[in-house]
Length: 218
Length: 251
Image (cartoon, rainbow over all chains, first blue to last red; front, side, top):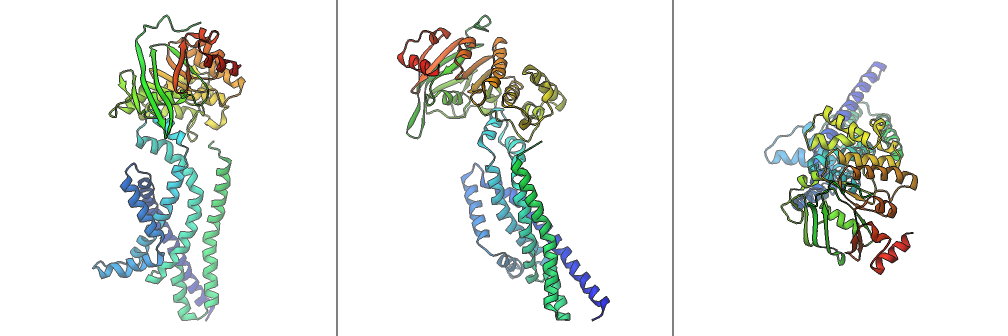
């Protein structure tokens, strides 16, 4: 195996890493939008909506992401829908993200003091206005550090997409390994690549947490 | 100095009749009757647990009542169909804990309701914010955030924020209880100024001297009822032993 050969494999791994980031971004964006819906339903004035969402969260949190992934990729085609690996991975990761972030954001919204709701209510703001202009902006500040921390989980969990044949970092490594047979080297490289994606996020999350501890809005 | 009494025309604008309120098994209000005339300044005093803050909160429908009726400027607060947002536009309320919005600057705190509820333009709302801030002596703090202000300043901003909605009646719920004496003075001056301008006000307070000075009517609440009421003179010459005892403990 020559030097140029190794460089070609390295490039392939990096491309896989790029897809890991891409899939993470999709999961975060789509899952984030769903999570907001989940969080708002969980604090809805309608009891049935709160209960239905609580049920959804329990189901998703009690199911391995891997099983969600299989359900999307192998289950849906059995029902007549053909699903690409990217779509199956995106949908199952988004669903996973929606349940976890939704519950975490609900907590953030509810940790905005009741007195803030009351003050906004007494200024004649509608429920929607109170939520959008008073409560959510404060909840975002509370939710940001744990959300950034959760992005680490998302990045790591995208590796599960390898089982449905989506070529992200792990799948790329498996493919390279199938021709080079250097598993220790290759999986070490993959570990380093994951670490270099996750570590900055962990640091960033911890910094945000420290800053929010100072509780300054200025 | 019973301010505003000249302009008063004895039109009753806030009235509570037989108001009862329970929290679980505890009867907090046990038949409260109260009438407030336009331009009148009413101070409600009494021990903690006497129901004075609850009575105030019922007027703004922050608590629903179990029995009786409350009418505020024609709004029938006790009826299920009351237009909450219309009611709240007529009532301004200031709390002990200021409750400014920490993510907004002082002027944004004040501009929020006029732009969102009354649909004022940003420019008009800003002008309004600066006017009410001037009224409470804090025009220079417009661009600051609440946590950069002292407690007394924050409370004055909370008053300004209420005033910006041009309420017909102001409710003050122990607004100086969280402040040290020096900061209490600056807040009380703002309230006194409002009284002189003829604002109808109901305030729950522990500041006896202040109540004596600016209130037209003092209401002493005890055990969930209006126990004694009258002009400031009742503080010097209480009729009931309960008020006498309360005043002795306050001094």
